Length: 395
Image (tube, rainbow, N blue to C red; front, top):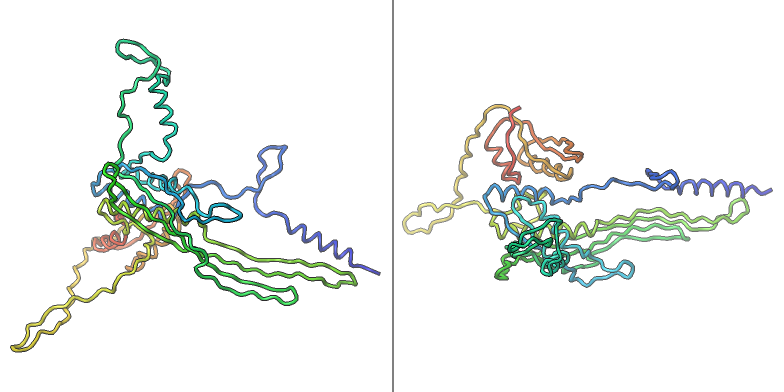
């Protein structure tokens, strides 16, 4: 008597039931099938969004005039393609820079030179006296329905940002293992690649290159999987089993390209404004600096001898100015990761900060503050760490 089929059907039922797509669904109309509905649309922020906002305030508070900047074609010059997906790198680099510079409303005036198709078309209509605005205009004692144009409405730009993505280096390093016995096995694999971009800031009227920036970023991905494929003899019936499980993850490549271009743009703005953007970066980009050397003083030599260098005594620290308890307002961040990085950064100078989520017009922001004894020296240290807008608020 065979009992394998009921068991097979039961197993199949369980497997089919487990294939149900998890997650929330949404039915937009009564006669439509429900659709899988994921996360809501959000503002496309990066780890440098808060840096742009901070640096905008720094330039404005320093009295720097707003720069009129145009963005050229930030093209992909790497030449890398994929057989299945076409170009590897986004061709929207210029659009990414428009969005980033648009955050700096106080210190940057964006001039569009990237796509002037509609403007050029309407200028042609004006020249042929075909463009109107629904009103009548007076031209040399004559009333006309078309818009007169005397030139000069398009403002000149001060600088233009040019450049592109110049490197895509696959498989910088990879490793892992794979093992299989009788069609039962597992594998683990890790790989890395890098992308680089080169930008330049050009003075529009003289074509003089005022600043250059070259940045690169490494990307990491991994894959872990296990596979079982075999025929098993269950109750005298041949049963086929094909079971696979695994996990594949890779750092978002195009988001990384966006951050590379953003970091390079901040570098260009720093060069032309003569104010470093790094104090606004949280976390700060990795830099290799030489170890600081202790200052030396020359001792008065004895007669007939050569002076030997002697380490100078460290200067006494300035006395702290304390005046009661206060709340130190460190910063407001659009990304929780940046707020957490700020907490870690101020902890290095002995400040225990708190993160509080706030709702601003339907958007969540993260406020970082610390309850401390009022000390102007500590405030100066926090501002020097990269939070120039930090201040004390009396509780």
